[in-house]
Length: 179
Image (cartoon, rainbow, N blue to C red):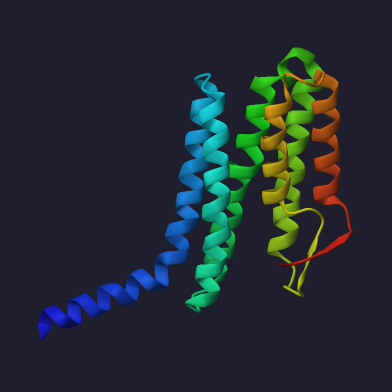
């Protein structure tokens, strides 16, 4: 009887924390992506950012399905997202191509991270109404990461422009319906 209660309580706690576990998985993958970028393994970094996007997709689904949405979960998700879809893709692109542009490459890398942080902060203080205001950082980060594959085919200025465009879209006032 006692063992059964312990197992039931453990399962219940795991269910309530599943979304946070997935969010922390997102954070870990983004952190590892940054480390691998710093060590020159850009292809592995790209893979880890996309795996972080999968974890990010499922953390919200798990929270809603298990009715475990919380303010803590929302804040933790945003902090994870700035790592996995702000810093990691920006650093990947900087190391992959933007560094050849010197000061503009540095500036637009930091601008992208700053706009991502602003977008997440704005999201955290607004009520959910079925729409996102501006491009979600997850989408921007995935687009920027995916563009890494085009480095052999496009000049560095293309990536500078893309970084600027994604930065602008994240902080812009347009609405995107949530799916």
